[in-house]
Image 1 (cartoon, rainbow, N blue to C red):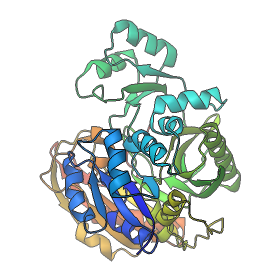
Image 2: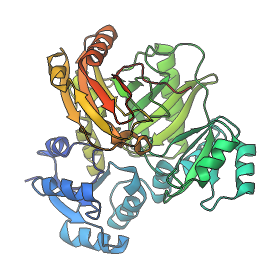
Image 3: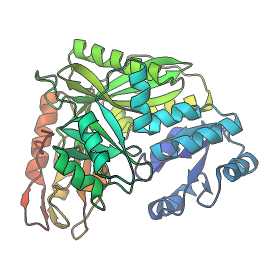
Length: 432
């Protein structure tokens, strides 16, 4: 039996429980840290009990959680795969003497306001930004409009997957959003308003001018192992897919890597795996956000692209302080891709889904996940978590990937309650 015991905290859907268990085989035993008061996590816990020890922290204070872990699990490492748990896990790791982000670094990685402030203080260019008061009044709205300007983006300070993220075109729309129930003001950590980053006027990718840089940091040294491209976004800021490796030119790839490395250093990250989103703007590559975890879908895409390495295994070894023997750059023999199909903004319920059974006949398709079925309600404000279905595949080159996407469009049709019936297309509405 492995001598190491690794605490893993993850959200529903952040990473596959099966994939995590496979990565841990012959490396460590898993202690799943979960909040069973959340219905989806309660369902996952039934599976987790077959793959490790489950510890429910729903009724525990941080101090009680530390003592329970110390006495019952005696962990030797800690791995966070969900942004919400980053700060409490930093406190737990400090108490248990485990390698992890410091509380300050964890705060900067999980709170967009703190991150913007830290980056700006280090001279990293950021858009204008302001915190949105929980109890907002007209003078507050006037101040926000004056300092940030328009167009702007309203988003939660903590959160992922584009949940409750809005494009704001003018002050009237800002007023409506920050005063209307259900528009995100109920977010526990509050909201942030920041200036919209205009996209580059030149073409940097056949897909979208937004990429992510996948990195691991060991003993303070930053190592990038991939740049991941994005399929065109759905309104307002919902991802529709990933392409790894991206099709950036060598010069653009270098510029992105340097930008991300500077941000990581500014945030004082010395350990772990990071997923950093970057947009090519009229002023060059700009940081959207730095996430202190492995990116969703990245381990599968690395495998589909032909690199013989387990990214989850890398993250676990880093968490356990085990030595890494990785040759960089990774050798990618194919193009791995993920396609996520979100509902339109106008949709309230799925009427029908037809053609999913035809997808596996498309060459290169590897995996299909159906997240919402006919008759189920959908809400675009839930962001990525309310996608309809998701497909993973790979192609020999970018042209083949585009052909595979077109074949998907021909295969599947989804209709919604608002009576808008149409084929799902890769040209989903882009950000203006």
